[in-house]
Length: 263
Image 1 (cartoon, rainbow, N blue to C red):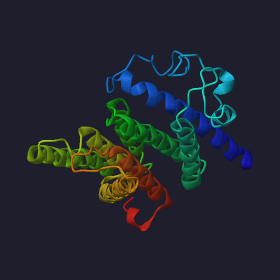
Image 2 (cartoon, rainbow, N blue to C red; image 1 turned 90 degrees about the horizontal axis):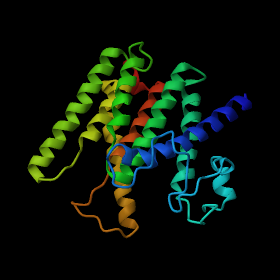
Image 3 (cartoon, rainbow, N blue to C red; image 1 turned 90 degrees about the vertical axis):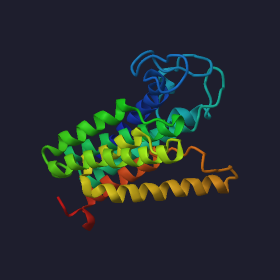
Image 4 (cartoon, rainbow, N blue to C red; image 1 turned 180 degrees about the horizontal axis):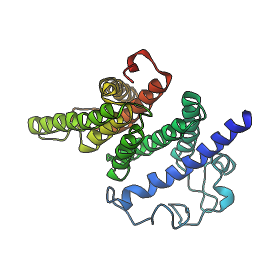
């Protein structure tokens, strides 16, 4: 059994390594951030953003290479952001969690894809303030597709969840913008909530939003304790908190907690 879990962990680490490519190149490729084009998600091969030196394959081993290089580029000694090993580790945790909750099953495979996408969405939103359609929309479609077979929720609940998730946040965001003259909740948040509804069904929407609000408040409190000035105009990306809440919702669904007995 340990061989199976070791394989799952290693696979998750390498998926996390690929997610770093998505997070680094995706925003520029999709027109969400300024910067020189960095290629697509396949080519060119990985290179140091500071000196542009290609990264040797021996230096692409998740976690191990970061530790062996002392967190610095082998060519120019520029520091490697801690985000890279953190995302790799999150990839392994996501894979482990999916299997622990859903067992060695097709549901675990799809749950892991859900978790992996949430990692990319959360980190990209934290970096850029955007939740890319290139990830959110396929996540909605995949949720509806797997629930066509009732994998995580009944299809009617999933369909209603997708529509209700988007419409509710879209209307709240529009009302906020009209009242305050600035954006509060963006359409990216609405699409991510739609994805949660598509995967877990409409009853999961309220608990997910409540959990996300708690996570966001914790982040704001931590920022204040760290001495950062926070005002009503300070932009606080909601996507990372919503992604965490979505992961918790899927875990609760897999554990078949009492609040999810609608299935």
